[in-house]
Every structure is written in C-alpha cells, then in structure tokens.
Amino acid sequence: MEMLQELALPCLYAFAAGIGFSVVFNVRGVGMLICACGGGLGWLCYLLSAPVVQSDIMQSFLAAMLISAWSEIMARLRKCPVTSYLVIALFPLVPGGGIYYSMRYAMNGDVQGFMNELMHTLGLAGALAVGVLLVSSLVRVVNARRQERQRPTS
Image (tube, rainbow, N blue to C red; front, side, top):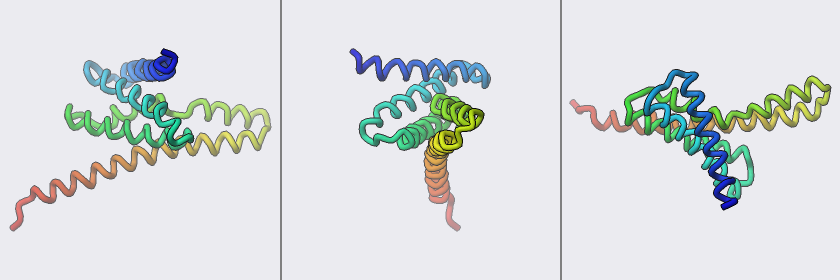
C-alpha cells in the first residue's frame, strides 16, 4: 500500500499539473487528457527508474525520452502538433526548485552552493533537452527513410 502511494500520488499530481497547463495552453477535450497522461507517465518512468539508474539526471533523461515518444505517437494518431503534447507533459519534470535554490544561494552570497546547485539544475535541464532531441531526431530519420522508400523510382 505504501509503495502504491509513493508511485501513485506523484503521478496523480503530475497528471493534475498537466490538466492545469492544458487550460493555460488552451488545449481542450481529449488532448487535455493526453497531455496530462504524458506528464503522469513521465513521472512514473522517473520514479520507477530510480532504483536502476540511481541518478536523477539519468532519470530525467529516461522520462524525457518516454514523454517525447508518447507525444510523437499521440500527435500522429490525432494529427496534431507534437509541441503542445510535449511541452505540457514535460512541465512537471522542469527543475524549478533547482533554479529557485540557485538564485537563493546567489542572493545570500554562497558562491559554492550557487555553483553546485546551478550545475545540477543545468544537468537536469540538459537531460530533458537531450532526451527530447534524441527521440525527435530518431522519428525524423525513420519518417524520412519511410518516405524515401515510398517514392516511385524513375
């Protein structure tokens, strides 16, 4: 039961955040649920990968790859842009706390604390970006090859 709460509640919160950001980004209907499910799925991946990789930066990378794949698939199925699904689903993983604490250390004059927190936050943000970039690039390559094979040869 405790394990279920440790997994279910953060995913539920990420789902709720996805609903909130869907309203802000004017995503309606089923798209709202798809975006929210992407956020919850990303957190589930983040939490489940913790015992395996033991690095929050790697956890963020894996979650970003899963969210990116989810967004690509849902966008193809619904014939909608990938960006809205992707951005909304990634919001729960954005390291806002790290940014806040970096600025807090900077304002207090703690240069070492600032640099440590800033480098960690940049690592998390970079992991999200690279995860999305990797999946997006792979999808583009696969689509380009598929279109190349479907072209009639003269």
